[in-house]
Image 1 (cartoon, rainbow, N blue to C red):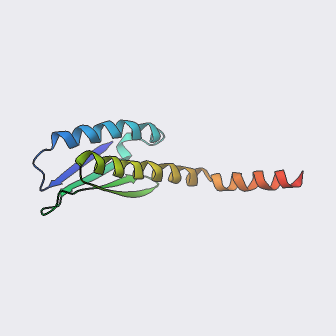
Image 2 (image 1 turned 90 degrees about the vertical axis):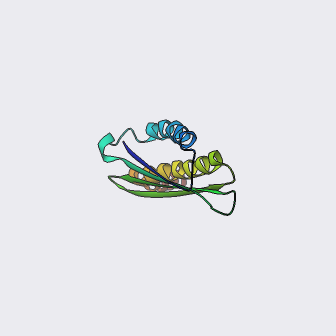
Image 3 (image 1 turned 180 degrees about the vertical axis):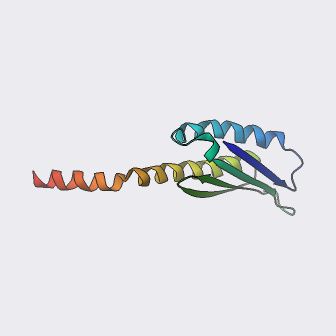
Length: 115
């Protein structure tokens, strides 16, 4: 998995990199079916210059599509957590769509209604 992080107006980078590494290990479990070379994650971390607010945006490029997530918060950890929570839910929805789960649910309802 290729990971690239960029920072804007942020002096402390180690704390962000530790949080991203922790969440990437969790997301790595969801992305086992893809080849590691085909997965690219780009994260952009920004501190608002006039407010105490942090923005963290993620772009995950998979062979089957590209996912985008944003996180905002007054603390660095909250913005990273928010972005990764959004990205995790998007990955789950994307994989369910690829498996065509919606067709299986429809078939179950039709067969249950026939009884």
